Image (cartoon, rainbow, N blue to C red; front, top):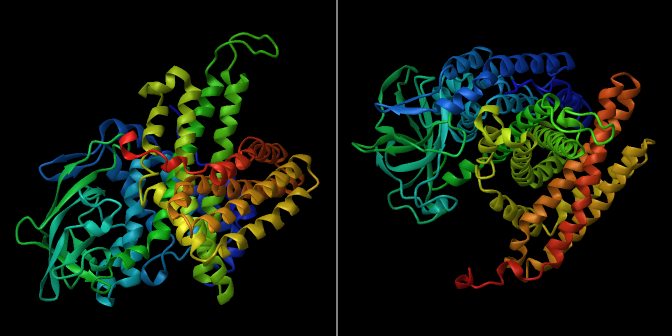
Length: 594
């Protein structure tokens, strides 16, 4: 079983050469994000991830979290690792100094988040959820609420959750039944929530739950939902802890993967009602939740990347050590399986996709930083437009691709991948939750064609592909044959996106059901191509970087991008055909024909 080693060199390269970290550091408030600081952050995060958090991954999978006497017990070593994380200040990296954060770019924090995810997916979900609570309270909380809850959430001394789902209300959040009864300045919350990640844990003495519920008399559907802060332990005005609130985990889900992460069924108000405090305006809970959706969906995409990186490292190391069969070129017997062409193909497929995912996640985070911080309003608007377009792609494409990479990792191991001892199966099981989190990937695809393409007549998509086309031409003219071929493949694939966008624009207003039936191929096409564009940018940068040193590493970067162009971008025409020429087959069968 391979120990996780943070790919710091590739992270540093992508941050500098692909997403423009030096330009991000020039944004107001980010002046401390110098090259030296970025290097130091990556190196130290890599040590914590590799030496402390990573070794607990298999332990967590085997032991899982358990519910004992109403209290969640996490696996051996998890609590201690969490407090090393807190003591190192890692939870506070991207938050504003005025609320106790370090004020570093979200772009850099995304690289750090990848390390936690790759080292130990089940462990990393706890701080990921806390980010959402901090964002919601920061954006919509009263000054009193911010003062009371943010300091310890930002440090990580307390953790946060999101409570949306109920047994009858999954993606259709508007069907929720949890109710809030007014009680002076507070509310009494009654109801049950399911699938609550880290709804309880034994790390900290408090958990701050953000709970969606309907105030008595509110309208049906999403327009009648409000958001509440519901602490596990009530917090006094002076910040000290008071009495236990009327809420508890009643069971833990038995899951395919992420066994270490306690996925709780939470009961609110079994006695007098759980005390909750309205955050934002009444009946505006979904809008408050959507404040943090871009970041939450990006973080889930990063989780897909992290699991893929761990699976890739596992498969690479196994392929170098496992001896089997004959080298068909030399006739040598009992050679490492990495010499077999099909194993080499699988490994390159895993490597190329993982590097493309990394570039896409970091680039999306960089657009978030520009949208938040750039002094020019037009530049902020353009970045926000790009961000809105990229978020469903990043979330869905990276999580689907993460599953694909982990699945291939099992195949590289052969029969040894199907048994638990190697650890390859765990990566595949853990990765499978990510396409479901934060809006299933089908929902992301519908969001892409509905809100991001049809709503503005394709303006944002066309503006983005115009930039890609210009950059593809520059990549094609790099002077290196492999990079030039990659640039030409990008340009051809951008043409496929444009044709697919035109089809969506012409079909959607007439037959939205038909357009929606092709939304997933549309998202996959855009994910493949944007990933390929960023791989091309990386390859072009590697040409000049290789002249200055690290020639072998940069040469591998160039060849990996060429593999991506040959084996993944080559699918663009087929995806376009699926979108534009598939007819009505998806909806052709009647329900009783299934």
